[in-house]
Length: 315
Image (cartoon, helix red, strand yellow):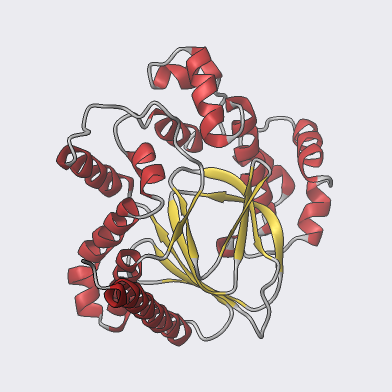
């Protein structure tokens, strides 16, 4: 018969270990980034951020990434759905997504501290296929569409893997030698955690929508049609439209427009001129760009540039 004391004590012990590991991670971030800002670490794809003033939700583009918060909370809005994540939930964006993101509650007393880890698509795909193969699921594409954003609990595997990764920041030699392996360990923890299903749908067998989004994201300054996107993954127009909307909450054309306008908004907020930003994301008509920008954000691109100066990397 199970010992009731062990049944209670083991989960409490695990929670204590997770809490201690989080405290250690937070201390590492505070030591390497004591003041507000964003830094790229020497570990490829790993950034630390520190925000000590409120940041409203503004247009942003989340590339495939993991965002973990050690103090405060962040928000990401996709298709009208608000995702709030903090020290109890981390965010997985398995595909490139046009969102609105911010940290409205950040302050000097309760700063936003966190780490952002870019997902290496090749490594994630390799790991996903290895897991599917080991589980006997290889060759059976998921029938449901991938999920654009997912929240996951800080379980022991994820917390320990993130701590082991960030501990490398204190040792350049270990960072160079062990960094790729520790990143792979973190990816594995994500695949095994609450967000694992969303990750496997984006990187495993049947990842047509994620591959289409990658295709679109690298061709924002060129015309693209639904038929062209569907042809890239060998799907009919109707099936592709349905699966794409399930994954992103937007039609393919709405998605492309949001990607272009969000990218332009970020460029303008970063100091680029309105005309340059419009051209960079594929608009040949400045008047059309201004009309569509104002329709989406409620103000002209010029007004947006004057009123918005947010370091886009923080979002």
